[in-house]
Image 1: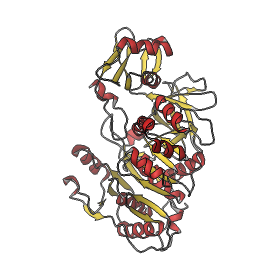
Image 2: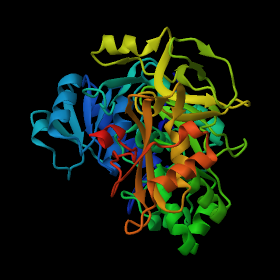
Image 3: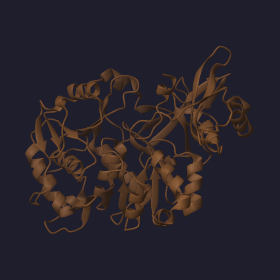
Length: 481
């Protein structure tokens, strides 16, 4: 297999091109070669390593070092609770933990050998590349239906995903990526750190997301921005009163949103103010990236584009029958196959077997396909597909209509049992003005006027805020709790 990081492999002590920048701290490719190479030599005999994945320069160096050493790395969310952390450690059985010298680790990790991640070292020849099928990372799922499962990601999956995104986004060594994503997920760590390094470009991590930080970095050479919908919503809200932010976003080559659907009103506000469209893509921990809107394709807010190079995608009925209709209406579960897939859930052959239909991975995401092949996701099978009165209803479509109402700040749609309909549509609303919220009847009529009558909410509930996880996704199970 060719090197994951060709620019790093070819770097010399004098290579002055910036690879990583975290605030005022940065490393050139030559410096990263030295630091990561030294750490790779130190951990080469480890069976598996845990990584305290704080949003720091050390986390990026530690990840690269483990990949250079061919040692599987387990990124740990610093906010993980004690019980979940204990499960991950027992399941993955790392032989040591990598951390920044200043990181304070919880007691659960103190029984492991600790290796502080260096940011200096002599540049030199890097270790031979590990095999394409060997484990690169073990990334734990969110655990919404039980204890988190460790998805084993092979080196091949990382390489083919990043190369497919190069094709879809025309990603090059000249790009400078700006983001403030967590570094214990696929989005922030694999796409946001390893992506630029594979291309030989630069990544600037903001540490903490702010519109001011986005403005500063995009105005000083940044060409790409990665974010999640909550970040783009904050940018959209700030745009009318921030000429510098508007100019910075307008000057970016590529704005990418992922991890959840970006509401159509935010798409419209950003495009109207900046002339730039936000590109959406679709992926999962187990599959890395599956689809994306292409930069050389048609702007299509509300879709996640077409399958990436090397990814096969199909929609199926509940009984496994493949859906051939591309009518924008027929809902089916997304199944994918390709070299982008994980190899297994660690220590869970039962869960691994259940996740596949032959060699097709069952994503649990429901979608429709447009006539030209674009995929529009309507939600998760477990929480966003509502069966009401004999109809299959996707929550996402209703949420977008609700968010278009001027009195609505946030919206989520779920189903709950109904003796007559099977399930009824329930809308959960955060009002734009809590002192003067819209009426439930007003919102129901608003939906019924734009969608089929059976899609209107039967129940409307108002909240002060919607529960979200670290990536900004609404935790719908918590709504009913």
